[in-house]
Image 1: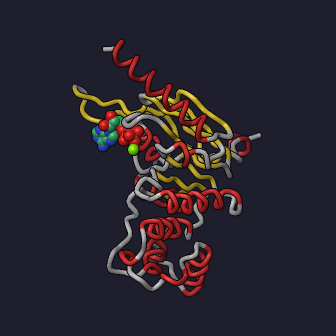
Image 2 (image 1 turned 120 degrees about the vertical axis):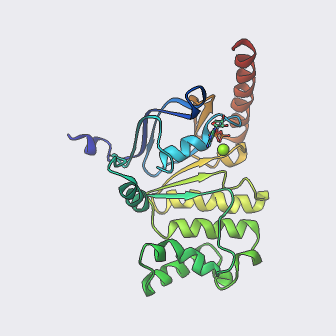
Image 3 (image 1 turned 135 degrees about the horizontal axis):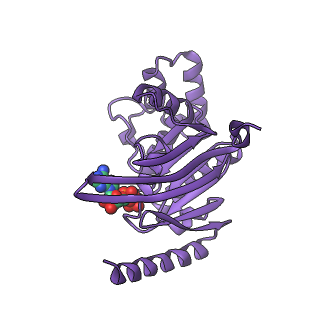
Length: 260
Ligand code: ADP
Ligand code: MG
């Protein structure tokens, strides 16, 4: 069996990934050797104290940032090492990324926002427009398709941002605190949508959050502390997640008071 076959059902694999920012004489080590494998079609939440490396981990896994060392593979295929253009194509064919700030373009309609990446990639014909409208309808947003983003609530805007990402049918959807700026009802709608992309469409979702209630929507929670994976919880419930987070925070405080 080839390595590719062996890892066919594996959506994301990080092998001993490190990331150091800054200069040699004043480095910030954000990731200290993270190894992680996520099965295709699963929903994983990444949690950890502020500054523990969650966003860095997501950006390295999504190919938005290049690790200092270590390997990242998506669907069994390593990121190309043949230049930024190849990385961009690799990413475009496999990966979607959703940010806490929705990054919608203010002066074009919701529908045009959803179609923008596909148009930038040289497509966006009639079938793409139909697909975008169908996706908006599925998300309960068909009635706002012609409006400008500012006319929508935060939760609606985040769903538009997710629709924009989903239109490209990414195998893996990364989301960095997608509910961080939302009230709890809007947050629930976004989480339900992420959950559905796994269950109905077989996508793999990896979401950073600091909210135990949001994390409880995932199949499993990976806990980061100080640039390392320190714990993992399957079939999480909010109380168990909150409990682990409390211990993590206490552990980190104890480490830093004992350490350098
Ligand atoms: P989290 O998302 O868990 O809050 P981050 O991944 O954003 O953590 O940051 C991890 C560490 O790396 C922090 O110490 C942060 O200050 C540092 N860091 C993150 N991004 C950069 C950057 N672009 N330049 C320098 N340091 C950074
Ligand atoms: Mg972050």
